[in-house]
Image 1 (cartoon, rainbow, N blue to C red):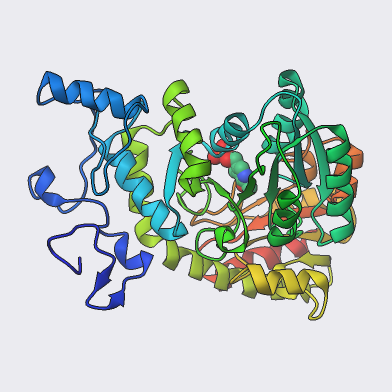
Image 2: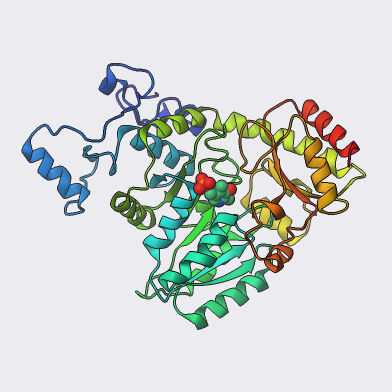
Length: 428
Ligand SMILES: *Cc1c(COP(=O)(O)O)cnc(C)c1O
């Protein structure tokens, strides 16, 4: 790294290094691991104390009875609290996000659940955008009421009126405890203005009289193409299973943001144990080395494929962020908030479920599977799979109709993908 004495160095001379350069070494000191270039996988549940006094001090730190001094790092105690692989991974994620803290979880859902549990109390109201990831909707609709958490949804389609209405309704129902938004929304790519929601939260007080936090699920574009902390988010949430993991071979999640909001999540994780195991941490670190180059290639392929579908006679509409109309409110939000359209989008075939199914069954290269953000192109039928648990009227409101297919474009040759889509569309 730039300054050889400091393995956390961010610069070479006066030049600030970018995250894609830092991913190969940041936060790891080879001297601590026999000179190994890459971090070993620390398969250990516990760590040996140098002395009884050290053990006592470590527990004071982990138990929150003492704060870290400037420049001091917490010692390792037990792998439910921390592990070298987990620490290096968290430091690297924080670098992408330019956040004070990042904390990793066993899945994206574990991160979302912990955000809600760490920041909300019974009687408070959760305001959230719809459509939202199917698992998140199920969590909100089926589990939150059990803990006395009330919920109000609003449509993610750039309507300020819908956000105003949701917050007014929420404030009548009880103190607002949190806002959770997913932008772009899955699967329709509806956008939510992050700053506008944050401004509403400035006028809210939770049951302790504090401003409630804004959590943004950044799985679709982050951390490369969208930086929610710069637009007013307090907590950025991830399913690392998707673009960050990027090879469809692991399940993991993360949260990033200022310590004020992320530390309570980390404390809850230590208490309940929904952290990531060392091997999966190592896998995510390996993925971070190629994150930018994968995302760039997938985004480029997606543009080529969106254009192909847009011009195809059997396709009705392509919901691709790159096609937003200049001058529309959605385009203004896109230009302000997003750096690129990403590589996951939906499109409506002409017809309904029979046409969609004939097309999907005829594909040979593109695989029929849920999930997204991997090196390979995946396609799915949200109405009958990812969003089948969402009530039909909510699905209709969100534009999840029976002819809608969602594609997550990978890094293959775009010509090969188009050849496959062409022959499958011919069979509809
Ligand atoms: C996949 C996904 C999740 C859930 O993540 P898991 O890692 O599967 O638990 C949450 N939000 C979005 C947007 C997702 O795509």
